[in-house]
Image (cartoon, rainbow, N blue to C red; front, side):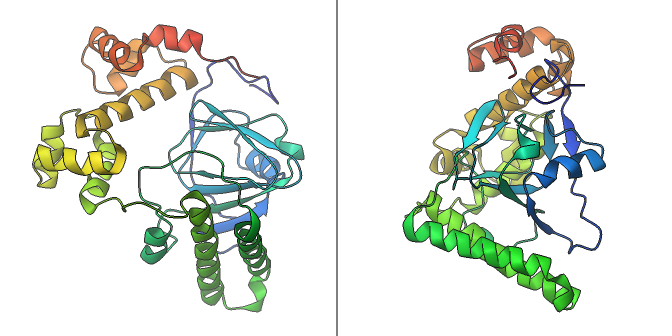
Length: 298
């Protein structure tokens, strides 16, 4: 098993379900980032190996940088910066987690009210980059986090149901504040058509890559799906589906020992050669070359 900066070259991705701390309100947790090391070990997880959490994570760096990888991209959070990791993304922390100076807020999908989801523009497509609040934005984020942290630790002062609602409201403030840093003047909100298409692709990308199949299942025309997807992402519906397949192929190639033919089977390709052609056309390299050329671990 890899340890502190020396993980296996191709460790398998492990799904990570939300496990609330005993006595904590279900749905959200706030903790020091350094405490995540011990918590992970306690639950049988290795934060230095690739994990695929099923929940949201807001990670903020305090006095020292925090280094991690999210879907093949190295992210170094400078002091004062935040990173939002979405459910389903593959993550791996750098070797300094046990000494990290930062905070992590975990929350389950569905914990925040629909009004917050809309105001914080939490619908796809997602932009994966650190956010660094400045000036009044930094003060607003700091105050939101401080109040959330205070109420999280003060569980005994309120009935559990009331405490949960207070945390829901304060987390809403934090995510809306961070969303404002990301998009001070946000563009058009993703349409309901695209949101439904996104959910269907996440569910069925290994079943079908045909836009016609998604259109029939959702009750739209292929042209309507493409218009909605172009407006939200700048990609056609077909490109969006193929991008999702390529992303999962890269995750499996980089984070598992599976041979290319088994990766092909998991992604719905009847023939490994068809998968190789598909991958080479859209990724610009073969599956084997991608696996070998991936950046070395640090």
